[in-house]
Length: 150
Image 1: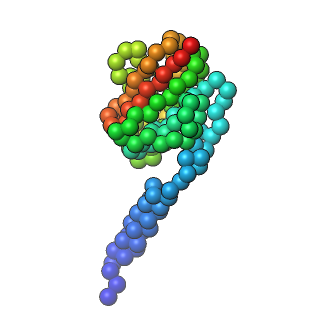
Image 2: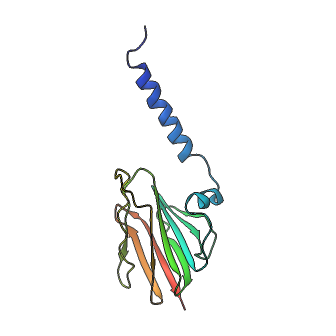
């Protein structure tokens, strides 16, 4: 006997398989780096905020595309005057980058995956050297710092 909800069940498991395949695809950092913003423009440093981890995209010193999962904080080191680009990759959860302590970064806009006017990135320039700590307002386990050098 055919289940009257069979098409719904098949659709659900198909979406589940697709989502699992995307999340567990084993993408190499280089591929994630391309997804999160591509090549760095001269004078910029880019990071990405994903559901459950942070990524050093480029221009931060260290290895481009490197992934930071809690409890390991992301570090992004760059010279004074460079522009920081924060890419919100989601794709399912709400995110917002906020300062922790002083000196502080500017509070980022809200990335809301349910909004019809999603904000996928924002940029700012820090005007003094120092260690700028930040976290995700909606997942306080996602933390990091921007280290600005002379």
